[in-house]
Length: 481
Image (cartoon, rainbow, N blue to C red; front, side):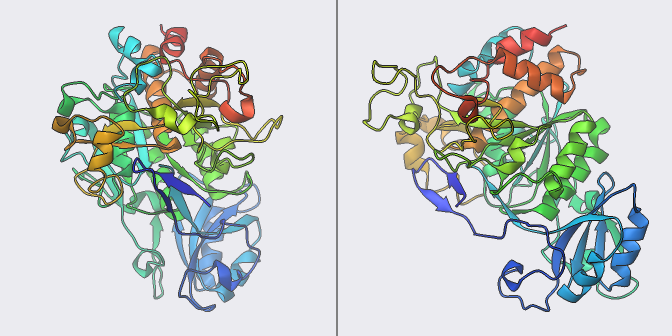
């Protein structure tokens, strides 16, 4: 079961849902939304091969079946709102690669973590990510309440994906049905796109928070970068994520977007034709680095978020804060079974324990199933949203007791753990690297530099921690012009 770790020490189990499997015809009733009947319409993502068919042909075929359709500007796929009978007709269209049921995806829930990755030394060198666009595809960003993420000065664009599941306005109810684009299903220029969870606001602060509300104490990894918020609310579905990626590519040049943070995912096996993987591959081809959380289903083997193992993305494991004095006691999630100090190797245990217990692991000796790199993801203090029910409200005691947040800062900062928190550390480092290199780095170059400059974690294998613990200073200096 997917988990989202929060600082209260509790684990919130999220809604169990189908794994977005490929369907060849009418899906079994268990794949339909709760409460629906076998005759009800549902959203499906239809992939097609551009060498064997065209967007217009697929769109016409779907409309002729009576179903509704949404196109994407940048991907060889469409979304269809179809009944099982209509889906059977659609599945017979020529040139299709697969039909995937839409599914809900899961969120994966600074002062010490920025020095732990040596990003503070990068700031001293005058590199802060200035001019680089960071897209945060998440629950939203509160750029109104928290000055660290101020809209429009720092969060330069903030959008909300607006439509409901099985939205007949979006897909059309009566003929002639409208044909809409995924990238247009948003409302732009919102000071606050964070309407409930607070997850995206916390993530954004790690990547690029300015530290304004704490007089610089809780400054993010790349405080000079520009944030572009793509908000979906407290839940995320494949259809919504694709609309977000479509928007990012449509506005890549406008906001100089060089990296997109994805602190969310799912479970199951890697499928290169999964709509999310198809989309992120296209995003990477366009020169945007895609960073994904490894997942919170550790410590067992083969528990990785399958989106994080795609060869064209950077998958991030969560560790404790190493090499710094840590009043947040992050090592609590890295303890040995006997409760001994995890950061001190012993004769019986030669490796320092810096990998979080919840961080998902890969498969030993498998060339694909492993994280790429590890970053701090335990007891991370970052920006608090004005709204929200998970990271905000009932967590004040834990913010003070576990994460040592001063009472003067608790109104604007909160504490959370998860690979969700590790991922934006890497996203911020990518922005620092791009500024240092004049914005010329390709995603594969960034991955190679990050892994080649990472600090080794003795006793750990690649399937657990990837290349090791990120070193922002070494990575930036390796590409600095």
